[in-house]
Length: 409
Image (cartoon, rainbow, N blue to C red):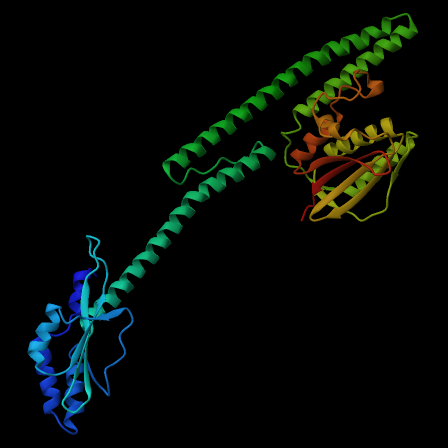
């Protein structure tokens, strides 16, 4: 509502109208006076009787004698004593603040004071209420639409983040749906294209390595046959050992390359597999101990599980002289822990030794550890099975390898 409307709402009746109201009240006597005052009060003009002049309104001031408005009311009211109060209202569009007369108090012949105070008409008050209610409903509707728009915009972004995390764990994860604003659809389409290209690169790598392995195995087989014709037993044994190391290195490389592209695995009994592995190591004369514990089942290939635990046991036996194996359950995860009492690993090297072809010992001899693919293979197979590999030094000395796999529900 503009300030001019407010001035109109709070302007008192004209001097002649005010004089007529005073005359009507004075002319009424007895029981008629309250009826007259009630009738006038219902017409949008607040009219009441008071024993004396009321206290000034908050924020109001009396109109001075020199004011034209005072002189106009004085001429209309005759010799009656009166006072006029005015108050500043809302600012004009120009920045000014108008004043409006809001209350007139007139002493009657009976000694009582008739107080006339202008009020906003009931129709105007109703419009104000309806307008405020409409504005509130519009504001609520806009907030709801804004929340819906934000949600519709944020959902594709959340799907993209979740899809990126899934793709990091599984190269065969489904493509993202194309929905949302055009920019987000373009982003999802670009992400799907990137996924397809990465899958293609991984497949090409695996096919190339498989082809190389096939050709190398052909030559290895020929060389193994030719070692039978080496007359010197010592040279023959060395040649056979070299060929065996080449074959093992080839197997490790192929297994690492295919570790991220494993088919769905069956349900495996981890306790039974660990017992079989430990029994085999004991038959070989190695120092391995399996602690007592409960059973756990996980969806992991038995071959992959044996390779993972076998690599961890090889490291523990090679560098620590023996291994302690345990199986625990915690927060939906099965923990296979392989610990040793060896020298451990420097803290700054713990993460690095899980990288492919990384060894703390510089040589590539199988007698001192091989090509540095053992832990990389364990980590790759674990991640392909939805798990992870973590290494840490034991407080009392030695290395602790923790292989976690999700428990099958």
